[in-house]
Amino acid sequence: MLKKGFYLEEIDKKNKALLCIDYMLEAIFNKDYETAEIEAKEFLAVIEMLKEIEAKKKRRAELEQLVSEMQKRGIKIDFATKVHA
Image (cartoon, rainbow, N blue to C red):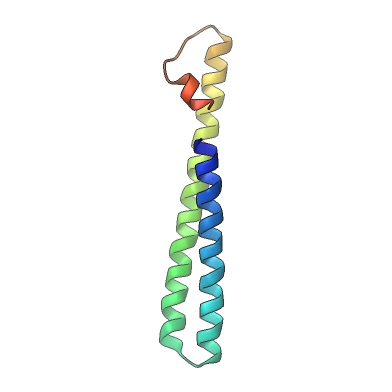
């Protein structure tokens, strides 16, 4: 479930980034530099969100690996079934 959540969130943010670029280019061609600047700031905010998603995915993968190793050793973990879902 969480993997789908990350995937959908990532797609949503990438689409938003593309829209920002589109709006930014339109504003530049219309010499509306104030709007272009606002869109550039929004684009940078979206990039930060995408970096956060990547960090979450990395932490999740590390947690899954740890849980897998612990299960191989016979250690039972309550939340392990949720992590692998």
